[in-house]
Length: 496
Figure 1 (cartoon, rainbow, N blue to C red):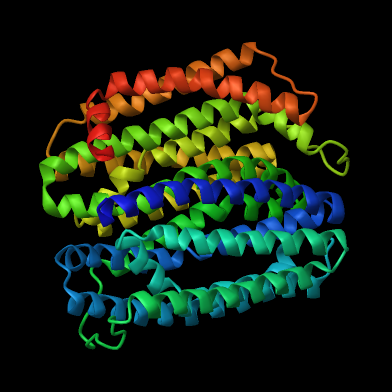
Figure 2: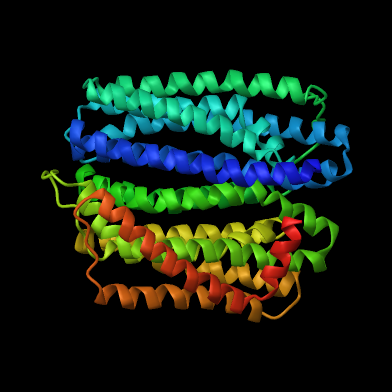
């Protein structure tokens, strides 16, 4: 078996399996937090975690620029050029670490005063500091290494380390929560585990990439489109973290706890699929530089596979979301967790986001990052303004609706660039694939509104969930094959 084939299999298996383990453990944590600390603290921690999760996307601008620069030298096995790109990448990461660190201090000072929470100022300050320091350590020591592993087809290493680290983190959090230890000390434990991760990455990189010279870049060596990618990721940071922050500022951290429970469901499904996509999307960059005509096939196949996969998951989630939340929050009385309208809005957010994953990736590879960055910023501004305008009147539904109305702009832009400008073809294939999946979802919504799915316990829920998933999968796969018949042929080729 060739190394490429081995890497592909490992990336798929570890990407999917690893994220599945993380999801199972991740579902336990919010329940433990709510029952041991209450909705107020759970909402507070969830808000702060989300802020830093998306602040970490600031590095993705450098990461994406670095990955695009590495595709060519890695395909040519040009070690000298690889070292140059990684050297420049490390320089940028370490510069942005300073900005990120200042951001952590600013947030630690500001958030205790603006979040509507009953938690004391010092605790909020320390939670923000310890959560933020984990990102500082990652930026400075780890990110350059993860970029190289991803582009070299070894993203499964990133996943293996992440899974082990996350398992340890969750175990520590669960034990400390049951012992009733202060939430700030809990976050300190998370920071310590982040530091340990650095030593693991350093040891692996030294063993397998000892030939990389991270001091080889000249002062005039730049990463192409780095500023455009940073703007794009800043926009996505604003866009993605708007909802919970707005809820915590304008209503309360308790209502953010409600949002976090629903978001946990849908973000975990997103992470599950993204665990596979993130590990094999390097194939898109390599194929684009090899043969544009062949790239079209993999472009459509990836769109069919991942948008189709997300559609099946969203149809299943729409049918089962409310029954799950009722079971999950049983016995919690400090705030109401059942909102019938939330599943539809969360599902639409994921569907629209995944409609642009592959085409959005192509806009960067093909050199349209700068134009796309301003579309991303416009999208973020629309979401932020609409969220602030709608939150007081419509609450949690208002901020989610603002997200949904902002998303189509970039979907249309990415399809326009990828189909017309880059592949120079009709929009018909892309519209057909997206349209077929949207049709499956809205048909499920209409059917779901007529059904009354309930579950008295988790065993019954699992059985009903399996039936729903199988039924939706049969329909979803059939529709996607009908919309893109060449997908089956390419999948077989990929398997071989």
